[in-house]
Length: 212
Image 1 (cartoon, rainbow, N blue to C red):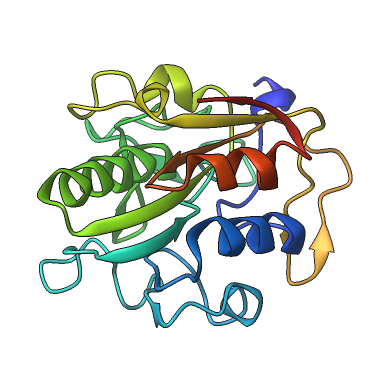
Image 2 (spheres, helix red, strand yellow; image 1 turned 180 degrees about the vertical axis):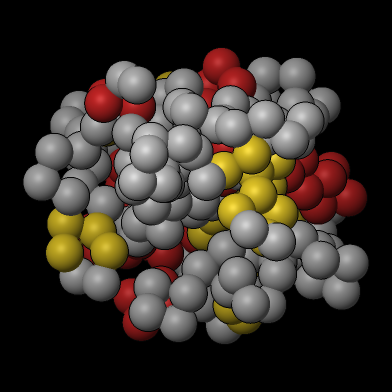
């Protein structure tokens, strides 16, 4: 298993300075479709969806106005029994001894969930759908890993590279419950769609190179 591609939880929050840059770019943050009560203390979205209030459900998936989207960033490391056998099974019912790759389903006991890598694709597809419907006025997408630029190609009619991008010069220390990652495993990016690309360039240019 490659430790550089390992994050023990997909629920890492965007640091405040990037949230504030997104707020200034967008004017305000109307919706966070994949946040938490804790993360919303800094995001202050008017409409929040958590894992208990699924932003991808039939009732909630028609996103509108301005969005900050930081989808779950990683798969979780498989748990092992004392004898070293995996407690996770892939969609074919075989033990998972390494990370489930993008698109896999994993189960633990009676629970069967989509791995976080696949969730990223689902959030991106829905964002593009809402964008093309004209419901979204502006968005900032938090790309936890640069590898998303590859994995999201062909996922929807538009890819992150079809929008303005920022590539931070330093790895972002995402945090969980106020505790920042000590050794961020990935380079990240931000994607922006909206009518204020010059504001995006000014606000995010302080963090790294911007492509418009």
